[in-house]
Image 1 (cartoon, helix red, strand yellow):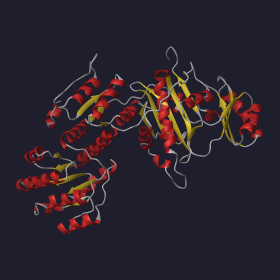
Image 2 (image 1 turned 135 degrees about the horizontal axis):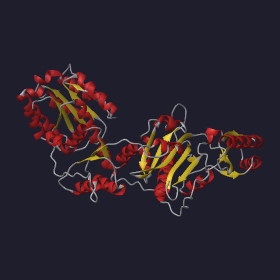
Image 3 (image 1 turned 45 degrees about the horizontal axis):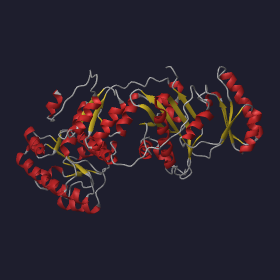
Length: 529
């Protein structure tokens, strides 16, 4: 609170909830969301105590277009035994909070300074940044590069201005840099209207959504500072709804004059860029508030069994939720496997069926691309021998004979129980590689296909789903539908579910769907762990 007062941020409501027994953090957020005098909600959170109340409060804030800026501390891992599943080993509570905040439109600040900067920008800007295109105007070429670098890191676009806009700027100041960043140089001291003219061209012809202006110590010249401020007020009136942020080393009186006029002033340029990225973040979040993104409706699902199930039983449960699976059957002997394969058609995949062997390939329990009955029979003998040797205590239900899915891109879908948010869905690409690389995204269940697409877009390997180096574009719609259905399945079973791994889900070319080639479901043990 002391730092807030030092920064000059106006606080109309303040609540500390550390020892709460009834009214909690979520209730305070909901109250602020409904308070007409509150423009921005700022929070410091150690942990969520009631998922439903918190989600309801955050959704209420977004519906009323109240930015929520949050610091969440504590980066402990979920108390799950990593060896039990890929999903559990990849899901840490901090990653889940990150995902939940993105899902419900919360901006997560990494420091107190960033929290105050973003709060300040949201409270005073009067408008959000509706697109990605950022204009930079500076009296220092080096600072222009510094801001452009920070913008690229935050995925803001700093586009080159159109030729006709550059031509107009060159006519005003022939030796200026006019591509964007626009470097007006120290000539601003000699041409008082230079900045206003540049901003007029930038907003009028530059096709940008927001601008940041670095004026260095120009503001120390009082008369010049006042003339620039009045000129920029005219620009703001001419182009309403386009946020402008300022980086300036003006003395306190000069800065106060700008802030009194409703402008936002930062002492350091990269802080302004981060604040602008936050305005873009909230614009996107508020746009999603009215989005039609129905959660798949599931009914008459079979109850989860008392204990772990084999692969065929797991995939049958997933199929009830509408998730595609490969055609398969369970047999007891290698000879029966050969007969089943003959009826099913080749090529065939053969796998050990056991509720106690989760990672079949680790013990040699999978054989691919089998093209004759004899290959299937021989592979069955070898798989059973390896299972007996490497997992002597495992229950063996037999062998899974499955059609080999058409070639596609491997993905992993999973569910784990988070202590704060309950069932959480994970997505990544690459089969076993995803565990080594940790390139995954999360969402709190349940959610619809549009949210699933945003989840897909977050991973670093996203380009692999597009047409890439001769590989076709993948069926992203089918993948998003599978994620949404898995989320609905997880929410339906709720606390009865411990973990799900669908690994791999084979994503075919566009229009050809996605099928689960393997699946693991681990229910919560009755009576506790």
